[in-house]
Amino acid sequence: MRRILLTLTSLVLVLPLIKAQYRQAPYASLTDSETVTAFKESVSFLASAYLDGRAAGSEGEKEAAAYLSHALESAGATLLSGKDGDVFGLKRENGDTLTSRNVVAFIPGYDRELRERYIVIGARMDNLGSRDITVNGQKVHKIFYGAGGNASGMAMLLELARRLSTNSVLLRRSVLLIGFGSSLETHAGAWYFLNRSFPDVDRIDAMINLDMLGTGTGGFYAYTGSNRDMNAMLEALSSTLQPVKPEIVAIEPCPSDHRAFYDKEIPSVFFTSGRYREYMTDKDTPEILQYAEMERETEYIFNFAVSLSGGPAPVFNPEKELRSRAQDESSTRTVPYYDCDRRPLFLGSGDPRVFLEKWVYQYLRYPAEAVREGRQGRVLVDFVIDEKGKVTDVKVLRGVHELLDAEAVRVISASPDWKPGILGGKKVRAEMSMYVEFRLEKKK
Image (cartoon, rainbow, N blue to C red; front, side, top):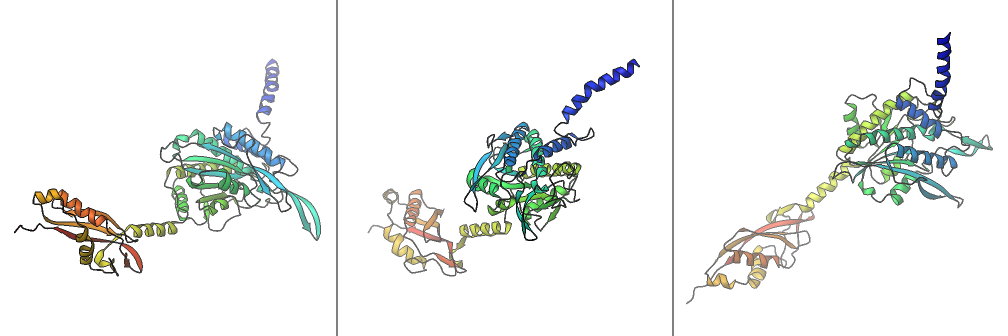
């Protein structure tokens, strides 16, 4: 009897502690992993009952931004946007200005060369809120919470922040973690970040977008806009042992913030579980989401982010890059003088002897010291006539004496412009070689 009383007393003391531990996670269970418990706590708060949800510019969006800011700092990331987020204004059709905000945090990479390059991981903060719709010809004010509120994506963003911060020694590039405001307002937060807020957009090598994950459709998808490099990276990772592997899809599951990055030609991947039955009807509460799936998806995305941070930068348009590189190479490639369809012209002539007679020997100065020493001979000089007709890259291939060599280089380098050579209808860099003769006359 005494033992039973002691046991009951212990339970009375312990139960309040258990309840306090899960106060912010009412759907957590004692069998949940640490990650799942964190997911449920985040989703529980982010899906909390504001009348207008987290619509752009609403109090709910502001509270979500404050929550993300605190949670990202607690995860070990450095907050760049301030406690209230990076605030921006959005002009509405009626002339009003909607005030929204982004939340931006930073985890530095370790590599000296790559730490000034960035990988962006983002998730939208807003949901649809409420608006007037027409039903059977009648205007009705409807509240749209929607699983499109993306509490799942934000919860995953926070978990990735914790893991990446803990494992920052694996990151060669730096990582920017962003909660985007006004995403459903034509991706305004992402546009503001890329066009007004962040000064080093040209240093962003890739973007990972998280939207509607763990949704219970049984799917896990990756959309890259058919980017060849990103697809190759996904396939390479999926060929290794992973808890879950995404299906690479060619059709965009739904519009999201990755579109703003596409506009800047930044390679991006959109991870999602896709639209699901409750998308437009229910709040994104813990009952809707499948947290074990979210945990597996997070593991894969974490591994992909680490791989992306340390590997070669993906190219937005590999074909365009190859064409540009080929053009650059063709612009620096030299063509032998006699291989040109139309040879370079000096004073209207394609005969090199005209250049020697009309320029070289007219302006050649025989070095006095070479005369005293009796130095003479033929100096073989190589030079390039570029696409603008200018003489460049003058060098001696076979010299006689340093004084004669230098004079030959001087007089050819001072040449007036030529008409450039033509090959395949385009101006090219033409290379030619010629002898410059230094000959002393015998005294009578």
